[in-house]
Amino acid sequence: MPMKRIHVMAAVIERGDAVFIARRPDHLHQGGKWEFPGGKLEAGETPLQGLTRELHEEIGIEVQSAQPLIRISHDYPDKSVLLDVWRVTAFSGDPHGKEGQQVQWVPRHALHEFEFPAANVPIVAAVQLPTLYAISPDVESVADFVQELRDTVTRGHRLIQIRARQLTPEDGNFLLAEIRALKREYTVNFLCNSALDLIVGDALQTGNWFRGDVFDGLHLTSRDLAQLSRRPDNLRWLAASCHSLEEIRLAEKLGVDFVTLSPVKPTQTHPDAQPLGMTQFAEWVELARVPVFGLGGLGEQDLSALVTAGAQGVAGIRGLWQFRSLQCSE
Image (cartoon, rainbow, N blue to C red; front, top):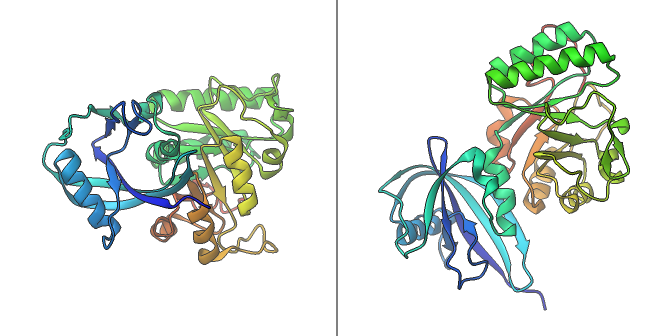
């Protein structure tokens, strides 16, 4: 008989760039690990009502502004939970452990250094990820590409996928030098798109222009996702391109940090691809156990609709990359 799923409210409480976390007492389920404050939703409560009550009882604050962040279903050996996570951006009171629990404000970028229950791991990723994921076009002129990359970063994008295939060693080194320079100036996470020659079996191939000291991670094509049986080592971020619920499940099994799901809308570059539409997209996001970016025919104007559908945010080339000309591919 399937276990009853417990609906648990959890809060990512923000103060500047810091996030409030609490340590579970040792005698409780998953004791000794850190968590985002919250508790079980009671019968008759709306999610916001339940969250507000739990935070008042547990850490002594009154919620003034909160928005949904991510919903994660997770099955432990002894229980099944639905974590309904909200971002709390305004509150009154000084959060503290009313029940004697250890609490701490942690810089957002350092959250992954703490031990959380398995169900909380995707939440940590969602907290650390932005809502916009810019994807580069392929490189035609490396000089133009580098200038467009700088324009994209200076416009405020902090998560960028580089799709640079078939670069000469000279052009590759030029691009790597520019990425290093941007990382010195800005806090940006750069992911390299996986080409087949980047992966051999389960390992990253060496001897190409991918450099782990420059890139913060790898974004797998759906074809490369299907070829891997374990997560490559020493990657801060691992993402994957998905076009179906089956591919999302493959990505989750591999241990990716987030996925893109596409195409949400018709695209100029893939006119024959059947778009998911917002209804199907929202259904698959609800079933996903990792943060999901919507991709395909989208721009910043679609962010609110995607977040309402449960997504992390918007990914795109045409809608986010800072082109100096109107020609691009997606």
